[in-house]
Length: 214
Image (cartoon, rainbow, N blue to C red):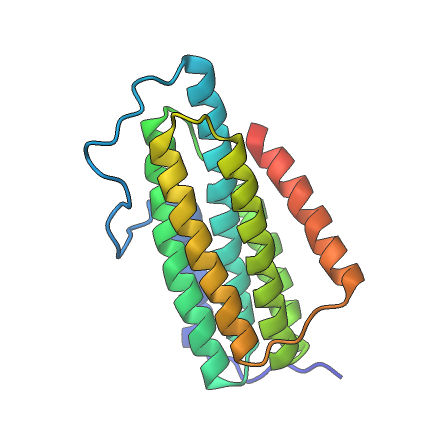
């Protein structure tokens, strides 16, 4: 039987505060924007800008989901080492969130209108994964990061070739996601069953196709 570990009022308030800031506030990165000031995107056409902005919106939604997932997982995890790994991943994702938001603004785009829905759904999934036990919790983290890295790789193929700014951001994000996956596996994350992986990919496909437009 799955049981929740003791949850303090402080933890609940912290999660609520983080959720509100993720969805409604501007993220603040702890690392510098990974793009040189001399890098230019002045050669992009209006159509390319619109396409790049939509792709970066999808990436921003992915980071909103990541914040929610890791918060839900950390909230119910019992192993301090696992909680720390989730917190570190979440910390890096805040940088990604801020970078994507800045790039969306530079391209004249907007964030997803459905961010509250993405956050709430992902938080619930994170709690569910965490309740299965730490090895599955970490396995879910590892598989999530592997799928995100693959998704980012596809965006490197889809972004306009001359959009060096977006491509630099996505490349750094991919490096970070791969590192998170490796950390989760080293901490003992279990490989998820194939049907679960397929379900995760299907959910990701629905999210990305919707976020591209909304």
